[in-house]
Length: 315
Figure 1 (cartoon, rainbow, N blue to C red):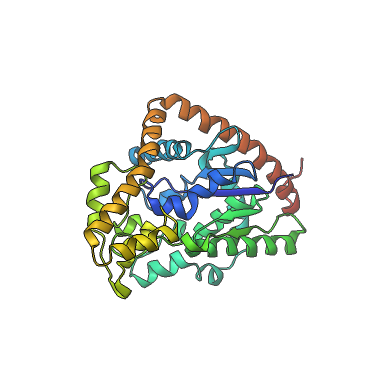
Figure 2: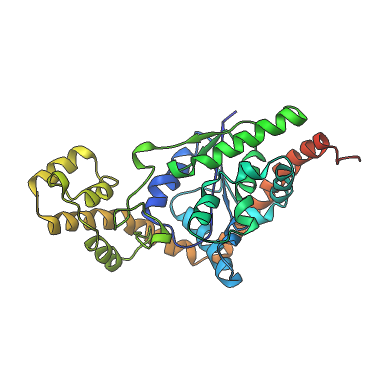
């Protein structure tokens, strides 16, 4: 049987090229090799989105985005987290096994406290809902960026603790990281992130691509505009780029224009495909509904085993 590859994304805004090269393209490449399962983490999004209309639209947009990059519903199980209540049920069971000091080590919680924010209970418990997302489906592989590796480690720790207390039940998942693109730089040189406002959207219009690339901060160490080069190597092999950057050494405007051309060449067909898919909203909803029903059947079966192990299943 094929190994199970699972990942999810929060419906919290437009995807950017960092999302694509850091994780999303792995899903498309994995089709055929793995049993791929991708979920839209809409309950996770409640930690940051407090607008129902916005979240509703974001869910539809994420489903459309995934279909546009090449996910095939015949090969990939695409579903919405909130359609499977077993995610939340299993998270509660994990919460009853996990200590507060252990969760206080989670990066998102520590960052919130360090920045003077008062974290919600949802943010604090976030890693255990993610552990449930992963472990509920006997997942083998979880594609993540380097900065998300801790979530997989927490899922493994949680599985080990449950297995130790109640008997062998959950697989231990492995993180899959492409190190050379695990962290994509933004236009300001920091990690590309929606929270920093330094992204290049995956389906950007040509004028937006031009504006954003021309605003990339140039670091000329070793004669190469490092931030431009680091983004550019996502679209061209290093051998080609080395020659190009040697020929145009110090000509930052021309190098940015070359990057603009390469990004446009990559994004234009994706953008057109997305526009076509978005026109048939009902088809997108059918994909999500069908995926949710199939995922629910898998989750219900697994939770039957878990309920019996913890002792709540009596009939």
